[in-house]
Each structure stands twice: as C-alpha cells, then as structure tokens.
Length: 488
Image 1 (tube, rainbow, N blue to C red):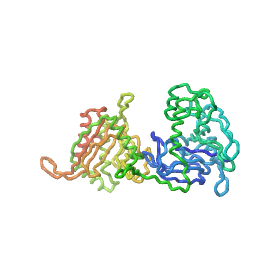
Image 2 (tube, rainbow, N blue to C red):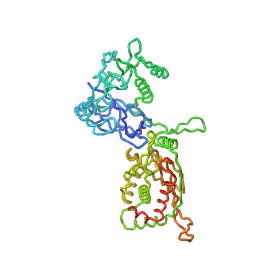
Image 3 (cartoon, rainbow, N blue to C red):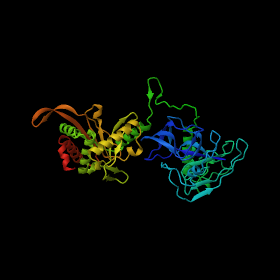
C-alpha cells in the first residue's frame, strides 16, 4: 500500500509570500528521489529550484507554468512506496524515513522543511468521524488529526516532521482513501460551536458555512483562526488545479481588455519593485541634493591602476570604495528607522547594494561587508553579482540585507536623477554619466571629465548639513583621489 504525500510550496525565506512557476522539471508518473528539484520558480528575489523532500512516484502537479502560487499551496503529490512505471517497486525505505521524519530529514534547507530532524513536540490528537465509503465501494477510515497545542487550524491529515502534509493513502488500485489536507469535515446537525459574534460575522460575510468546519478550540470550538484558514484554503484551491502531464502550460505576460488597452500584471520582480518603491515614498520623507564634480583625476588614477597588469579595477568599485569611506565619516546615512519603536538604528557593517538592470527587471544585488574590501576585491564581487544578475542565478541572500545603495544611472546616458530610496535604507548615491565638459581648472577654462552626483536621503536620520557633508566628501574624493589615503 502506497502513501501519498503532498508537498507544498515552502517558505523560500526573506518574507516571500508567493512564487511564479517557471518550468516543471518532472512529469506525472516520474520517479523522484529525495532532494531532487521538481520545479523552477521565480520569486520577487531570484530564480529558485525547489527540491522535493520525498522519494516516490509523482501522482499530480498543481499550477501551470506562468501561474503564481502562494507559500503553502500544493505543488505536487508523491506516492511513497508506489510501483515505478516500469513495474519495479520504488525502494524507499531510507527515503521514506527521511520523508516522514522517522529518521533524519531532507538535506536541503528551505524554510519550513528540510531540517535534519524535527524537534519533539507535544501534540493534541483529536479523533475524527468516520469517512463515508469511497467511490470504489471500499470503506475508508479517516486518520486521527495531529495538531500542535494551540494550533490555529484543524486538518484531516497528519503533518510530518518536514512540515509537509500526508493527505491521503492509496490502495493497490490507486484509489484515494482520504481527502485533501485542510478539507473541512461535515459535522452533525445541532448548534454550531461558536461563541464569538465576530467569527459568525466573518463567516457570514464570506459565505462560509460554519457547520462544515471543525474547530481547533476546546471541545471543537470554532475560532477566528479556523475561519481565516478555511478562507485561505478555499482561495488556494480556486487558484491551483492539477495540470495534466502532457498539457502545455504557458500564461500570457499581458492581458488585453478593450481595444487600444493592454494590461501588464505587476508580479514577480516588477511587482516587488513596485511595492518597495511605493512603500519608500509612503514612509520615507526623502530629500535630494546634488553636485557636479571633476572626475578627470579619478579616471587617470583608474587607468594607472589597470596599467600595472594586475586584475582590472572597475569604476564602480572605486566609487564604492569612496562610499564606504564616506559612510565611516557620516554613519548617520548607514542606518534604518524602526518606526514601531521610533528609533534610528545605526548599523556598523556596510552592505552595499548597487542597481542592476536585467531582462527580468531592476534588481539590487548586495556586496556584503563592503567596508572590509579593497578596490580589487570590490571589483571581483561586482563582476560576480552582475553576471549572476544577467543569468538569473542570484539567490535571495544576494538580494537582501543592503544598508546603502549605489546607483550608476550614467550607463543609461543621463546626467542626473532623483532616485527613490531602497526601503528600509536611509540613503542612495546616484552617479550620472562622465562626459567632457568645459570646466574651470586651476583658474583657466579647460575641457574636463565631469560627473553629476546626487544623494537622496531620509530626512529623519539626518539634516541637510550631514547629507551635504557626505556628498561633498564624495565629490572631493572623485576630484582628488589622494583624499582617500587619509582613510585607507
């Protein structure tokens, strides 16, 4: 007898709540091993291959390529111990143990599953009423429901140590023996065990029949959390449906409505950027100051460095080194604001983000501990992250944790900009194109390489004097790179 386990989209970390299916890596009927990638998804941060913690035969896939799934939605179901298509039984003794948590777990660590072994927890076990006979005429008994103490919801299936849900059992003919996880159970006629009128109103406003729910409170009392979980489960079930193995799954990137109108969904990277920029403009009282600087000497210094035969130093790396030196003098700008506590949190480490335009949209990779790196190390890290951005292989860790952002919009051929701060940071330095311009140098008019620098800053963390001092120091280093020697 095979056990069908349902693998749900795990929490991919960094507060991500949904992901878009880019490409299925398995078909229904395929045999999968523990930790084998089964689907490639795109989050608001990066492309991720999602490994399955079970070994067995894929019995169903949920969601089409191009569709979005929320965290916790079903991805696939796997029959553990089922016969492979060729007729041989899948040897899954050790794999099954890893899947069900009876022995060590999946080696991959995604939030929500994949730890070595789940810690022991006391669980309340509540018996469930018998399930009516299945369609094939065989009577089926429901499994007891295991639920953590104080859990917000009741389920018709137990949850294993890896966090996934064992939703059904399959007999030799492949018939399903239990319903999907989270499916409500019918209760006998009589008063509904609900005390709170708010719970009743919430269910009534959403057209939910409380008699179809099993409460997780004392003596089956239906709590608000039970209603909210049922509503979420209904929404997920509406958005996700099994996809036949041979069905081509492609979703259009745009949706045409009326003639002359095309709608582009704000999802994936673009949706995440829209949310972050909107939040930045809503929460942060930003201000911008700018200055023109003569970058001729900086360009000469870079040319001299690269003429030595050593690894090439990028202009972005030199500007980054200038930024870290400036932040050591003006630490107010390497901070964030805790709005709940009404406190400014100054940060010791400088994790420098830089804006990169890719085919997937604007991303901001982060150079961790930039203040500890010299120009050569910064060049190497910028090159690595830029290549990963172009190929779509940046990880969520590469795109989070920034404390200050450097935005080189000069690559687009523009001189100036007023960039929006990358929330929750406190400032962003913008760099325009470096072009020959007439400039007064040593009392005479000359043609020099001129660049416009702009600083957008959170006015809550500092006043204009601090922001102006930071920007003036950056401009001085651009005009006279020897100024950096004072901080090296």
